[in-house]
Image (cartoon, rainbow, N blue to C red):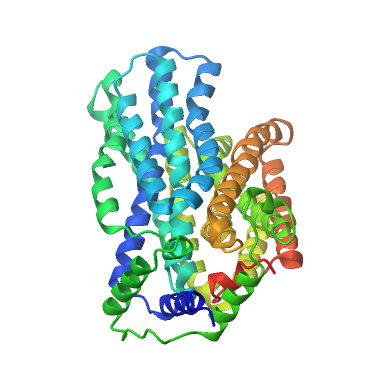
Length: 461
């Protein structure tokens, strides 16, 4: 038998069998910190818009450009970063992405000109977009098969809670500085984490599966032995999981030239459409919470400050839903748990169209946020589990970009129209219908990926 194939089978088998340990947990903490930095960078713009609108008397067009320029950069960054991660490695792209979005956020505090601030935010968004898919992509390639979902869900729960940080920072800055200084404070604080690149460079390893695809087996062996030593597992250069070996054989026999065009042909087309539909549905819920919940609550009589706080609490509640979903999705499967979460969310949304009591609306809304936005980490992980290593960077990057265009740009734009025509109930109905379509697609055409070797679930069969 091919000695290279046996070596890969041995390394992957050992990687998948190792239990949770300090080495893996430290890597997950670093990847979670990526999302904390990005949450601050993306979330701070609402405070910046609030202040600059007052002191510069910005018109609607200027506010729209300032509010959306970073998101535009994120979409473009995620679309193109996938190609770079597959070619140059996950770690290298992550380092450059963090460097770009923290540096240009910091530089943004220096300008008095709106066009330059918008330009800095756009470039910062390009860097943030390059980084956004990498935590769940790297966890899918580093973590043991039985614990991929829980680790991604922990990171995403931290991300959800981190969106409170820019709100608190902006509030503190407004209370303690004059307005001309206050809007700069979030830029400065958001840029300071540039110094943490040192820890990413020193302690974050490259993806072992990417290293193997590039023939760097000694680095993979050292990483696997580090994990085994941390977990108290004996090194075994002869251990091979037959399922892993058979998967690698099938991949070797069906080896084909990898191209982004493969995303749109069988078998990856159906996988892409299902996973993009799931992610888009989740993002619609997330953006409604982030963008429209304060507006919806003011229509029920809440003042603006309280509405903003309640919107932040809703986002944090979704982190609890993600934490609960992680171990359930690993134990019982992605499809059944995601479907249950979405069905409960749809029922809550439809119920909210009939509720008259404000207190009951808040309770049901909190339940909807727990389940409806709690699905996000499994959506992200499920995308990464659909593609082979050579295509995984492109697949996750392209999937993140497409889903953010659908769920974060188009849906967010048209939801404003739904509110003006049909009121908030039209928004609830739209979200419920979107969820129902996504769950039907998953149940009919989706594949179960829990507790399986990445090579097995991402093969071309």
